[in-house]
Length: 534
Image 1: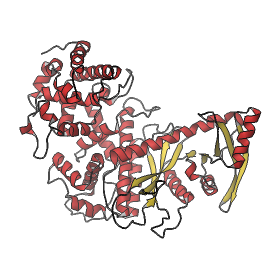
Image 2: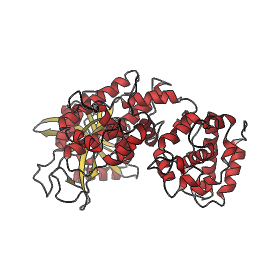
Image 3: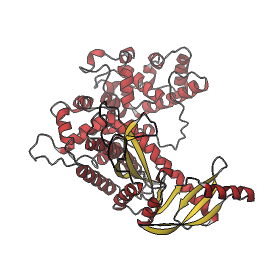
Image 4: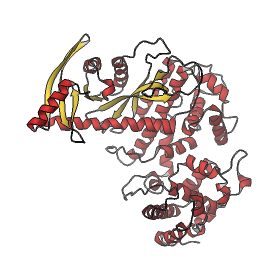
């Protein structure tokens, strides 16, 4: 057919099925996909492996449920759903029960016409809205309520960003990581170092271990191109802490070079420091690098990071493992100010930092003085002891909302004057912050507002652990550090690809809300991992 009915009439067709469908696959199976296809689509599908109708149904599954490409593949691979939707199982790969993620992605990006993609998006959104209002969930995603100016990549695929733009930006972003780590192997080895970065990326993007990562890479690029998992482990197991740090530093330099034509820093240049955990589940004797947590039965590796936040490009500039003293080891106590100094000094090699944020876990005179010695402002919430509670009580009696008190830090490594800021919290209670900035009472609330930017780091940790962290049960601490650092770098690749895409429109980027999700970036990176000539 050459003409398609309006999205509204097509939506009505699908809505009629919504009333009686029991599952997402049941709903999509009832959709007459031919109503959405144009003549040009049928012609394009003559040159590909799978028919247009089941492919359109699969793409509806993705849009209605909000799956990433990997999520869609996993959905179709389970319970015979791909066959139920009409795919020919004789065309599946040897170990597959559905079309590969690469096949599904290519169908959307290069086979379907732009007009058909727009129709699928429009009808999906109408259907999700209707299901949400009528409590007919069927495991559908929540409505996006996206306005016409929203930078959703699925809209930009068929609009502002071309496939070629996305390909170039993703490839440039991935090149900031691959090849940054030097294994020190001989130059005549079978695989270049970048090949192991590619395999590590498949593991990270699939949140899997070496065997599955190898299998995924072979599905994409073939057995000859892919290193064996054992070879990969032998190679990366040789990475020392210095090699890992040098590779991380090189990747950050590459990243900043890639965006030197874009204004990515906005004053005050703000950084957030925090510590995250990576749970340890292996049996047997606990390695000395494993730490306790707030949960008595939980053990974890810990990592401190420093990230740009606020109005600057949100990337992680520094990382360091944290090793504490625990009952099962003879480690020395962890000194937070030493970790803070290490992170800030590493980050200062790349950017001039104006303000550092951290939570109450970093409260100590040594941390305050360390930041003062490093020439940066700091802002931290303060644990409220008797003095702070006394001031808050006096403020309540006198009807004051804001107060600023001078204080001093005077310890062995230096001294400086600081301010205690008493400001209203979201619950109406007075909150106390400490800063070395000379803040007047009338400016206190505005200065404390910067602290809200610290929450960006929590989102970073969530993205790394859910999207970019490979699995391992190894007790080799350096290997664990490499896996986590690689997860950080994949997160940075995501943010870099997003900025490079936006830079095709403007060089002054003020909104860093991702135009592409982490899951979508994973799909694109997987497609463009393989080295290719420029």
